[in-house]
Length: 114
Image (cartoon, rainbow, N blue to C red; front, side, top):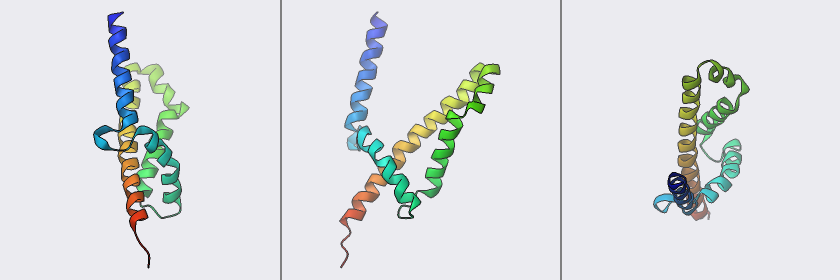
């Protein structure tokens, strides 16, 4: 029971930090809301996230692909480990890229056209 309470407290603290924004950065909700804008800006050529967004899309497709279920069936630890590595990389990349995009939006909004 005590371990469950400690885990719950740890996950609650993590969720609070993510919602608040780590180290003064954007909150998780702002980052999630920025993803569609980032995709649109990349597709229209306004934002230079082309290769990074393509890699994130490929990683997402790899993780959710039903073809990837076969290695888990035969190679449990190795099959799950490759997914864990991919999800960790994807989460870090999405966090970094959304922060970069939000900074780009701020800079773009500050530009005065005469």
